[in-house]
Picture 1: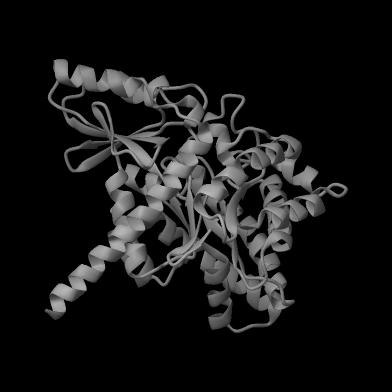
Picture 2: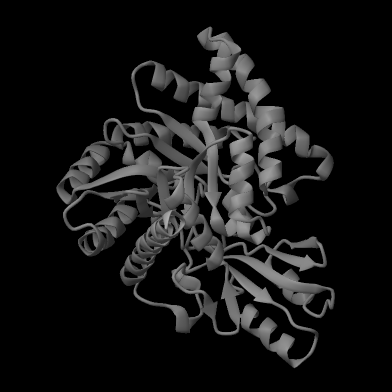
Length: 415
């Protein structure tokens, strides 16, 4: 839905179904009730996730035209897509395979170009569109001495997408951007790594290719890269690596890089007391969230340094480490709760980020991404439609609180 803070929606990767038929059924089941609750009169935006299989099927026969007709009937629109998970995202154990195929593989390029073809057809006139994608690859698939080679290959493949997006725009089509989503243990996992890759790899390679294909000057080529490759700021992911929102946004501003999409998500947080019964209880509470489908990387604080665990079992195994004082886990818990019994979430980072967006908007695309409803501990599970509505309403209320607080601050300053 369009708000004064940007287009706000949720990501449909929450819904089961890798085929287009099943996924469309899920959209038809949930979207009307969500729209009635949150945007009964105005159009409602959808953050669409399509698997590779669904993207192929949507382009078959009359499927795309039928979907467009349904969108018109329901007064809905698609402005952003999630192109990170390529294959099965619910039924089987996903874990590190969420990164497969990585950006060194042609299958990833073809899938992403297909998603952009669909998005360009669905996008309302005059609106920009974005697709979030993986952080190039997964570190643990390669020895460290191969990371640069994988990054170089991934960069060339991403530029094949950029060349196509630039061509679409030059031919009168919409502005489309690929939104790179850093994640712990990804080849890009924090803001420093993202900026370094962008400036040391993507821009030099991209300028050369764009100048050669379109005959533009260096300044224009760099501007096009920054228009077509942006950051997907997943609040959960940056919270896990202990990077505060204002610091990340400040660095992006300094380097003149854009945020294509803000994914509103919360990580699981466990402040760890000294070894003993209280710590044991905290670890036991944390262990309840260890489930077999998704990858739950954990980043711990050890003094002034960070310790990375590839998944939750490795962190639990190291639970008696007396030097570790906090765990943060890649588990997208519902954003409207700050506490989960003994545990906490990184909801304060969300509040902080929404305050910054309300004060000086830095993106047009806002997407809640809580896809773990089916794997939450039993006591936290609620009806999916109800959960989506509650999350989006919480975001809207948080924005309004930020606006009121800012107005009060301004009045106090004038007074």
